[in-house]
Structures are given as C-alpha cells and as structure tokens.
Image (cartoon, rainbow over all chains, first blue to last red):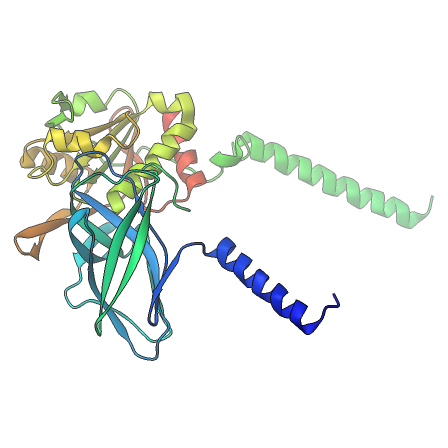
Length: 157
Length: 205
C-alpha cells in the first residue's frame, strides 16, 4: 500500500482504535494499573455471595499490592486465593494483600483466585454492570464495571 | 505389468487389509462406537454409598434408597462458596442440557458440607440458577458425614477470622451406578467432551 506519511499515520490510529475496541473492549486504568474484562456470574435472588473475575496488570516499575475493594451491592469485597490439593479445594481470604510485581499481572478466574462479594444486597442479574472499586497499596484505586454473565454459562473449559 | 507396480499393489493391499482388521477390532472393542466414548471407562469396583437420612431443598426426606435404583451424580459443596461450587453447578447445568433425554435417567445431587448455613431454603435459592434436576441435600451433620465418608469425601471447616468460616472440600463429582457404587469421578475442571462421555456412559448403565 502506498500512502503519504499522514495517511499511514491516520490508518495506524484507526487500526489501533479498532484493535482496542475488538480485542479488549473493556479496560479500566488508573495510574499504572490496568484492569481487563471484569466479570461475574449471575446469582439467584437471596444468594449471599458472588465472585468477580478479571485480569489486573501492573504497568509500573514498583510492585503493587491488591488489598481489597468495595461495591455498593455487597457488604464486603475479599481477595481470595483458591488452591486445589489433590481434588480438595481450599479457599482463603488473603490477609496481607496479593502482590503484583512490576510489569506483571494476576488473573482472577473460576477455580483460581477470585474477588468474593460477601453479603450481596441484591442479586447479580445477567446483563447488568456492577460498579466495583479496587484498592491497592501504595494508595491507589481503580473503578471498574463488572459485567454480569449467565449463571449457567460456559466459561471456557 | 511392471514388477514395481505389482509390488506397490501388493503393499497397498497388505496395508488395506491391516487397516480393515484394525478397524473391525476397534469397532468390536467399542473404541469407535462413538467419538465421545473413546476415553470414558466407568467400572464398578468402587465403594458403595452408606445409609443416610437427609432432606432436599423442598424439605422432602431423602435416603440412600432414593439414590440407588438409577445411576447418580453426587457432589459436595456449600452455598457460601462463590467460585468452585457455582462453577461446578454451571458446568453440570450445561452438560445436563447437552445430554438431552439421557439426563432424565440420572439422579443428580448436590450435598452441602455446611448444613449450619445451608438450610433447605438457602439451598433452594442457591440452586435456583441451575438445572432444576439438581437436588440439594442438607440435614444433620452426622448424616452428611456418614454419606461423605462412604464415598471418601474430605471436608473441613476453616475459620477465616471475624467469626467467619469457609469449607475445604473434595471438588470431584462422584458417578454411582444403580447399586450406589462409585464407578467413576469427574474431577473439577474436566473438559466438556470427557465429562459428557462419562455422563452418557453412566446414563446407559
């Protein structure tokens, strides 16, 4: 393709915009922290707990520590690790946060680490977006919208 | 005809015969009965379900007599579990949908390891997002312990601070034949095709 420098530049910008729309339509950033595709599984009316999943990237040059979060729809947000020993599942709240090294990321996904929404004040309904603020140390926070997907939906395995 | 061409024909014939012999053996042994049955092999040497008395999410009495009589899927979890249990229930809901009418031949049970919090009402709410054929069982801790022990299930209450607790538990699903014996398991995170193959095989027992 032969274009002027200006044409190439604008084509590049358009391609970038298309790529960001197509590949990662939902990213939330604050400072050096980026949160990708936060989602949750729908819950039935009256169910007390839910879980939120996402990828958190630390684009900075220093480690950050995810210490918790808050959402208006639950009494508390806890950072949980999940380990499988043999076929025994063990879920634990982290007490000192979850460290994300500089340039690193952590993935919250079903059957692994997750953010537990404790004491749901309302059900998580498929199709809605739930606000969630993630809290980090050193002091930083990222506001995200958690997309609620079908309870019985597949999740990729 | 060129001798080389004849030789090729001979080799090809031998190859073809070998292939036919292999294919008929494979069909005979059931390897090719169904693409999805290739690797599922359920066998009935496992432990047998113990006697118990529990109630389901509709307050109906359930004993081991309600489980034996047809093949069953049993797994253990708790309602305050935000991740592994709903993921398992979601997987199972998807699989039961894919099984179609085969699924009706199975009994499907979710047994709480946390009867303290999981009353029948709580179980009813928790399970309402998932396939309606899944029966939730709760009741006296010693009855749940008897049932769990007979199948080799591990679970334990773990304090997490602030008076709260969680449960460690075996995450596999147990597949029982119509006599209540373990004939296989579906481990957490099993791939869909393998799980479906096992469930189809179980439904055909």
